[in-house]
Structure formats: structure tokens, C-alpha cells
Length: 217
Image (cartoon, rainbow, N blue to C red):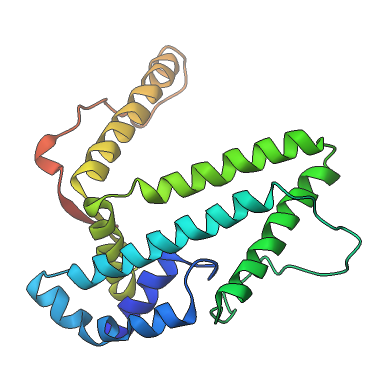
């Protein structure tokens, strides 16, 4: 089980293998061997340490990507970038992963250029995209990391089970409430016609008591 949870946790963090290095994965090996103990004791410090390394790598990669946008790309060179990297090997050096990012950024640039965007617009758009992507990871807190790790465990044992942190559970309740409320006018309209309506959802308020729970679907 420990190996399956470890593999799923890595996949949730870095599914395209564009951030972490092979040396990072080797460094995480003791975590792979002790996940069962971590889950039994509730001591998730090693999982948090893995995420800290991942977050450092994310910052490094996007800093590199942003720097690449300050220089022109040579589109006369014939090269390729594989978008589907699920079966790819982990990069073994900074030079190798930097070259992967050069090709990724070049590909993003070319796709926008072929769509008719001007160079200045492309650079601005990609910088905004990369900064937003980086900030999403940098803003993750301990609660978010715990949710990710516990969902890696859940996905490894039962893919129909999800763990919601307190914040995620609150957001889930709000979204469900808003969705149900949005259906109410449609139901009311349907009841004013000759058509039969089997059921009509009733809007509900978020329940603070349900802020922490694992939901099995």
C-alpha cells in the first residue's frame, strides 16, 4: 500500500514530471517505505517535506520559464516536445529539465503565434499564465497539502472516496447550495405548466458541522 500511495502522491504533485528531478525522487525513498506508519500515527511531516521540495522546484521552473520569455526563440530549428509525459522518465539534471522547459515554453509561444497573436501579446499572456500557475502552488498551505496526501491515500485504496479539508468542505457546501438555488426558478417555472415534475430540489444552507469529512461516492 505504501508504494501505491507514494506513487499517487507524486502523480498529484507532478503528473507531467516537469518539476522534480530523479535525485529528488531518490531522496523521497524513505517516505515510500514509511507511509503505512505515517497513516497509522497521523504524523505526516515527511509528506510535508516532500511538498516543500516540490514547491521549491515549482518556483525554480517558473522563474526559468519567465526568463526564457525575455529572449527570442529560434523556430528554424527542427525539434519536438511531447505533451503526454505520463510515461516519461524523471529528468536527471538541471540542464535536462531546463531544456524540457525551453521546449515547453517554445511550444506555448508557437501555439499562440499560429493563432495570430502578436509577439508582445504572447509574452504578456504567457507571463501572466506562468505567474498564476506558480502562485497557485505557492499559496497552498498545510491544510491543502494534508488534503492532497490523504486523497492520494484515498485514490490508492478506493477511487470513489475523497477527503475534504475544512476549507474545501465549506467551499463544497457553498457551491452545492448555489447550484441548487439556481435550479429553483426552473422548477417553479415547470410547475406552472401542464408538465409533470417528479422532484424539485430545495436550497439549503452550508452546514458548519460538516466542515471536516471524508465523502464516499
